[in-house]
Length: 389
Image (tube, rainbow, N blue to C red):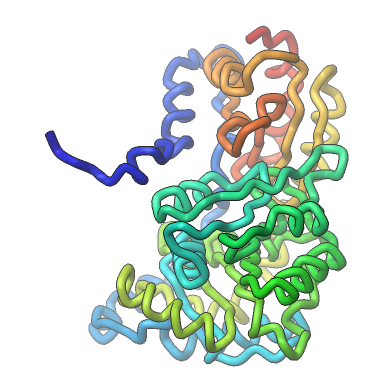
């Protein structure tokens, strides 16, 4: 019998395809299916970006290998963008381009931790983070985040969890799955803790471009003169530029961490796809107005979703922001997976059960509304009414 890696065998199967299979049983009698399962942009990228992606793909030189840490033009453009957004000193040498943000996370945690060590992960967590750590043999120390705190993690609680195996703290803000947006002071407190205890602070900001209007940055960490000693920031171009299929992400880190990240990236990707890098170097400035419009659209859906859930007896929003709403269902004692499956099969609405995001989450469902326009969102009360899982 084939012997396989036990750490991979013990890792859960990707949950979104399994959940989507429920929709095959939906008969359509409540109207078109509403897919609120995956955090993917519903709109296509702007036409000029599509044209540049096509033109770049046709250039023979971009079919060759590029620099391990990314092509110079994109690293320079992204460094300028980050420095302007955060008011900090960020240079191209601080930037690595990756094949998506999941790979950025893998590279960051491999640079910081290894088998036998551990990482503190706020719970509920993004399931791909937990899966990656499981497969790498890195221990996961859950940092419970409570609904009464709007799922914002507590610095003192995190410090109490640090032991001799701890190598990194992870923050995700705006958060997946809860939508929680961590206050700047909380993020600063985690940075102070990481520096004091000699740990890496890995901050995943995949959804930073969907903060509310007027919130131009999530934190001030990159304005600190010593940020390179502690902070590893992750970013995804997928959502903001509507190009998830082109797999483009970024890491911002100091020279000590970046030297180790380079080794990881050389081993697992060699270089990120170069046509996307070429087009995105233009898009950072070239699509700024379009991205502002998309940000306003998503912010509008946050408001619309909140109004709709308020009209659904027994359902309540525990946290909402960026792409996500984390919603408490009214069926006490019923597992979230059963509720989500019933909602998909009988009412044609696909959300993800809270149990997919860690233990103790059976009271909640996660809804990602970037794919749903306001008309679809407005139809939710009729779909939720009378549900009996």
